[in-house]
Amino acid sequence: MSNAEWVARKNAATPRGVGVKCEFYVERAENAEIWDIEGNRYIDFVSGVSVNNVGHRHPKVVAAIKAQLDQVIHCGFQVTPYASYVELAEKLNRLTPGDYPKKTTFFSSGAEAVENAVKIARASTGRRAIVAFSGGFHGRTMMGIALTGKAQPYRTGFGPFPTEVHHVAYPNALHGISTEDALDELQRLFKTEVDASQVAAIIFEPVQGEGGFVPAPLDFVQGLRALCDQHGIVLIADEIQTGFGRTGKLFAMEHYGVAPDLMTMAKSIAGGVPLSAVCGRAEIMDGPGPGGLGGTFAGNPLAIAAAHAVLEVIEEEGLVERANLIGSRLVTALEALRGVLPNIAEVRGKGSMVAIELLDDAGEPAPAMAQSIQAAALRNGVLTLVCGFYGNVIRFLHPLTMPLDVLDEGIDKFSAAVREHAKSSSDAPVR
Figure 1 (spheres, rainbow, N blue to C red):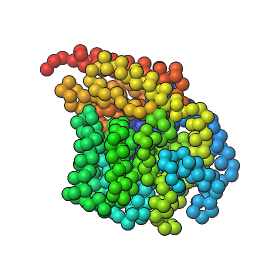
Figure 2: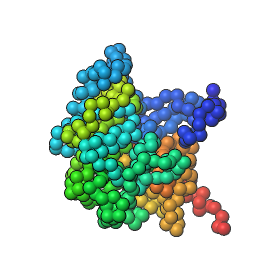
Figure 3: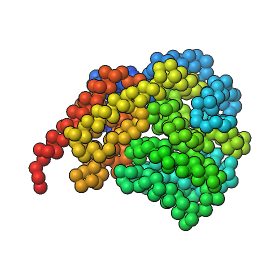
Figure 4: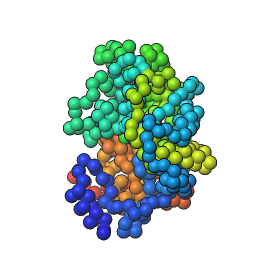
């Protein structure tokens, strides 16, 4: 069957709410390349939305899953536990930032990790209110979208949402929001809507993902830490998209010199097998009573085995350092494109978590321009994603194992898409 025939079948069989960007169907994938059922090849700057940090089908991950298949596929850790779960928790307790006793528990999706982090914070503090940030993304469950600070498409039509969730501005220098502005707004929230003594947790992304790959300024993160310490608030770092080497550190919080109380992880933790985790201070993690946490598939043996392999690959292949190498190469090329298309207002990110933001000639967000360039890149065989508060940011989420020749080929093809857009814009008639 052709791609077009599968698109027709998909449209007939699945709801429109599951938005699908590409109109081709994958047959196989290897490291940073994907081939569709018609034999077309694509260079992957998406990685299953930051899942395949170690590449598609890394041999070590595949071998770990195959070996686990010969032992047990599922038995439910809460009933019949297995050692690999405990060993992975011990590893993450050691590797995550923070010099204090920690505990870790596992779930199946990032949204589950976020929901359970909120539960843990509320149980340990006896408080109810949660503070999140505009532009943040924390999942598609009801609590996840209550925390998410972007209405379309995540919140529209799905309310009412869980109560006692408050949003404040996230710093973004390009759009005129400074650290001082963001922290002042947080203080105003404490004075006008919810007293700080009633806040269980503040949750934030060290680098906003869906919000446009906006890194949190150092003084902002340190300011959050100080406020949480002052008021007894649990600081939750959502590292679902930033974790496991993406930002040039194993975890993005390592850039800031302070540690969160709780951290959520998912996406690239298990190389494509569904797994997530919450790790944090032992005394906070022990807030919920026995049976308060868990899930039927939480910490499935196949996913745990894959996660052990992912951590080994990251260490053995030096992928944290490689993230910086690849990211630097990409940033240099994207900065050069600003001479071709001055509408590239900013090239930003940390490590390999890199994006460009597009503004029109009047300095306003240019989502149509982002969509046009993304579409041209796809025609050239390069997969990218659009994100951002205004939908005007193109982000790059390549595997950290991407060969340099494939990286350079992808950059060249993306650059051609930018030049194509710039030329078509200059050729457009003046109205």
